[in-house]
Amino acid sequence: MTGIQLYNTLARAKQAFEPQDPKNVRMYVCGPTVYDYAHIGNARPVIVFDTLFRLLRHVYGEAHVTYARNITDIDDKIMKRAADEGVSIKTISERYARVYNEDMGTLGALQPTIQPKATEHLSEMIRMMQTLIAKGHAYEAEGHVLFNVPSMENYGRLSGHSRDELIAGARVDVAPFKKDPADFVLWKPSTDEQPGWNSPWGRGRPGWHLECSCMIEKHLGETIDIHGGGQDLIFPHHENEIAQSECTHGAQFVRYWMHNGYLTVDGEKMSKSLGNFHTVHDLIADHPGEALRLSLLTAHYRQPIDFSLANVSEQKRRLDRWYRLTESVASATEVPASVIEALADDLNTPRAIAALDALATKETAADLKAGAQFMGFLTMAADKWFQGDAADGDDAAEIEAMIAARKAARANKDFAESDRIRDALLAKGIVLEDSAGGTTWRRAD
Ligand SMILES: [Zn+2]
Image 1 (cartoon, rainbow, N blue to C red):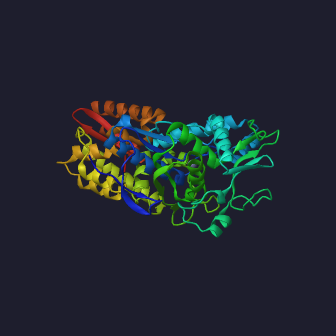
Image 2 (image 1 turned 90 degrees about the vertical axis):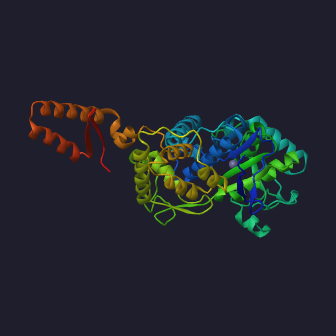
Image 3 (image 1 turned 180 degrees about the vertical axis):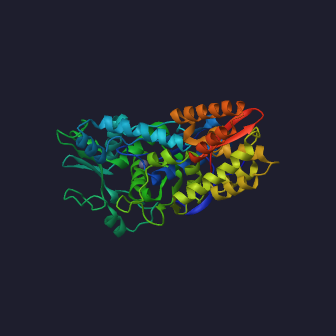
């Protein structure tokens, strides 16, 4: 069995991965808050941990890996969007959860084993708060329930923040009812107009951190193997998940913490005002999902990545090359060892891609196909890949009609007309290829 090495943020070191139970490997990744389209930065953890999910399934067997990625479907941003549109939060969250899953599917991400929704775990959240209050780790104040940070001796271990940094970094304003400025919200009151649920502390709604702890407890248990997310979640989100779960259960929460680095676009932080803001939804309208996926994996996950459309085009050309080589080749039955070994080394995707490039020869095309498909590439028929979006709908029907007209012209020896049709198609970016079997077409490079 291939040994997997993973960098554990908590240990600040690369470690041999040893699951608690190899028959039941458990991974959780913080999912989206669904109030708008996901941007390309949101897609990075999805693709990174999808690659890890594929590796874990390869090593431990598909039936022995459970991957949960939640949907945060209650949040102030969702409430604002719903109020702006005059619809319920359910309408908003269901709409964007559906788009999210479709878009991530286009990027080749497998569906997680479980996608729990926050609003379906209210009773678990209330129970966890009751336990934390009973154990002296949380308290009620003015309709809120707060976690008391000084009640936990080793709070802050994951981020390594000092107490001053913890206080300065607390996102919410220091409310007068807090016992300690670093205390964070588990539950907050809702007004009559706001969505809310009944609780022993009045009608209200959960804080974001609490949701993940409860969904993990319910679906994966008290101690899980891997918890992933973006580096920006280390503090306060993951620090607070640890506090809630470990103080509730008195057991280690997560054995390996993994965090992916930041994503910039054209060298800058992505922002709507800079005009470099890309939603996945827009990108997949113009670029193949596999090229976007490959682009996101060209940097090691712990390194920052600078996303650019130029790089997406470069990866598209790399995929063109792979598709051409493997067009009429059956995939090898085994995933090449060079690919598995690279991924097992703390998910070294640049090395895995280099290993695929090394297999991009006529002699090793079957191995290339197996390795690429394992990583979520070469999943289309080559002709569909080269035809691109034009393969669907009206475009394709029109192209086929022109090809038929050209065939008729050639049969009548009207070569001027035949050439005219070929040139007209070329002007539309469509290249014809004649062979003994007839004429096929593809998009020009
Ligand atoms: Zn989370």
